[in-house]
Image 1 (tube, one colour):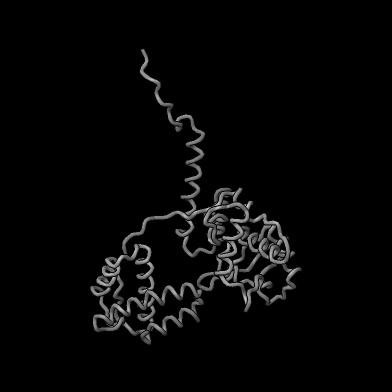
Image 2: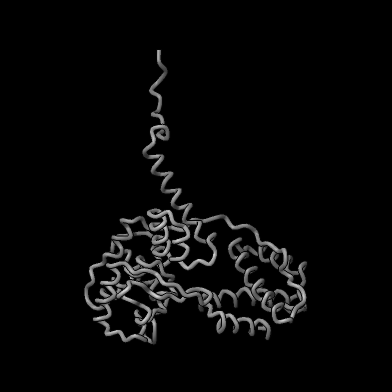
Length: 298
């Protein structure tokens, strides 16, 4: 790995406080760029716009999806913008470069009944009480997986019913905690004896790992009779969709989710429209299909 790429990744880890998952993705994408440049006898800082366009075209021919190409180009843009800022480059070779458009995929959500079925887990034993608190908090507050894993007890304010969250880009926000979630968390705290600086959900060596939560939620969903591919982000999607469906307040949902750009939040309006379209198709007399003809009239 070149010195420049290594320094950029250090900046992302230390100053931007990017998650380990995001850092791994950036590292893979920039290593792919570096290997491609080295095969052509140059370094990443010597690439111009034409060569960057060739890189993206080669990756596309190699079979990378539009989504992967967009992510790869985003990592390159971040790197070159950082190099420009520090005076190490004069021109950004990614300027004006676009990756193929990815098809828009709507997030999968649980309906309200399924969400309740999942979180109303019978809290049997210490592990069961932890699981109930974890599920209730996920659905109650719409946290990202990394945000939930990083919580300590001092982040929870039971008196005001709020949780202090450190999100992407080191942005802080305060999110409400519903009454069932507060009760489940207080029960879990009494069980675990959590101190203010201790993780709310501990693992073997510090906070619980993101992978452990993913596996556990899949197991719990199957135990509760939900045979969907349930994952932590599905609970966040469900939270956002249900809040928007009830309130219609897109800006409010943006604040709750911690999205920097409201365009990211607008995807949930498409989910809400799908719901309304189904209601319309089922209820409106002019939307119902005509019965099949039983033959011509005399």
